Image (cartoon, rainbow, N blue to C red; front, side, top):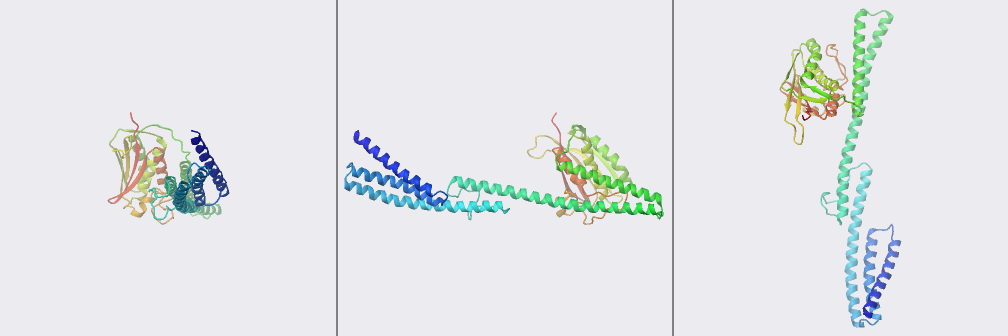
Length: 390
């Protein structure tokens, strides 16, 4: 029993001494390569075994022959252990440098790339932790790339809005100034007509400012809704009443049909504005003697939706939108024409290209959406809204 206790003490002592040497080595290697630290850790374990064998041999617990055998076997195992530790350290260091480069690229605004020859979704790195870190890095890279793209698109949209609205504001302001100077100098051939034109220009400017204010509230998340039960029939009737004068001036047939008695939970003022924008947009782009139709009906909810939905569709006879432009229809300042000059037809008027962007914002604020598609001879805009249960 006493011999066993001495052997335990000698083993613990040799291990403690080797651990102390290893700890000092690791302290000295702080900030150095991971490969060197792993090599030092493996060498510490080998040193503990060899030291224990030598101490046991000196204490006569094993013969010199047996001590030599143990020493040879230990040194052979040490070589294998140190080689494996070196290879593992090299692999970890390589993967660490790869991930570090990916992080640096991510910080510089570039897309982070998974380790060469390895899929980010596969745990092919030296350790599961590094594989998990690689997957998280790839996922973060995708999210940041999408975020940067959204930011760039938003910045482009903001710049286009400033440029286009500046142009659209300059035109009526220049006209107002010219007409005011003509009236002031007494050279206006028809003062009454000038007054009417000035009022129309002022109305157009007021409408543009109102649209800009509405759009700014939507983008800032400051659009406050007064929720109440709104019948689709009331929305359609209101849109028909508001759009009829404009439709008659253009000799356009404006009609509507409601095939459901469903109600939605929303802000009647904002929903009316969205539907009115769709109707005015349809009238503006439908040729004379064309047809614009409003339809309200219940539809099957999309997969995953828990509430039934209703659809308000506005169909026009604009001739269709190019397929490459369909994705930009609801962008700020999109008009569907490269010309930025406002229409001169006073019955139709002209907007700043904000109406459809406002429609999308209002629909999304009501947990709905709005889409557009081409049909034979024209376009079909659909605004879908959820119907509350009960």
